[in-house]
Image 1 (cartoon, rainbow, N blue to C red):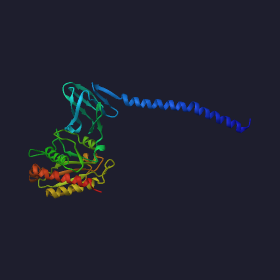
Image 2 (cartoon, rainbow, N blue to C red; image 1 turned 90 degrees about the horizontal axis):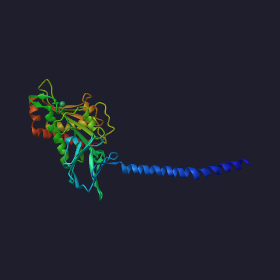
Image 3 (cartoon, rainbow, N blue to C red; image 1 turned 180 degrees about the vertical axis):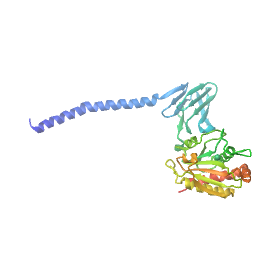
Length: 329
Ligand SMILES: [Zn+2]
């Protein structure tokens, strides 16, 4: 037999093996695979209660129209991690934490979803079901700012002449938040606290990281010399802005906000400074600033800081500063 004949036979055998063995096996293998995927998609909904099914892979809650004829989300904050959906239909109060425990109480037409992170929900429907889908806020909002009211709960911050810093910080922060809620800036604001809650300073940047484009913390200052007054804004020395969709830096953000505050309040400009001592600013992986709106130890400034009109002016300065910083190119 000549050499080329051996090659020719080997080639034919290889071709036969390819067509008769490998090809059918591949087809069988991929068919099984794709069926498994389909099964996984269909069976990963687990029944929580009659008519309620939850898919913990896609975070979709499927509600049968046989138990709910209408469904809508009600307004609530609670740190933006508790979401209540009211519906008309079978009485059932259904609480569950996404990825955590599930409890059922057949008393109200209500489903409460508690999440570990700030979320947004979409409600879709087809002819048989409502689908409550958990959506990443970054997919919903192009611009997100976290407003951080200093201290709170067991941590009062400074207490001077019966005035608690945590209350001043919250009053001004809430006003900033409300301005975003009511305005048409296209910027979504969330707060680290909406009430008198204790939140660890290391947990505040955690709320913002991976979610927000900007972090703004509001505080009031104290000093041993009671003649000292004025506002200052602080940013972190080393900046990690990789998660922000902004062009502005912490330094630039501090500059913009400080300028607005001094202009609006007509207070003394104590300038901006890079300060690694402020945990909330240092740990935020985005342009972040901490504002010291004024000195509680200065009697005149303390009186102003407790005045609602003054607080509104301060909030307006922060609000406008944030808008300007988002537009910075
Ligand atoms: Zn403080």
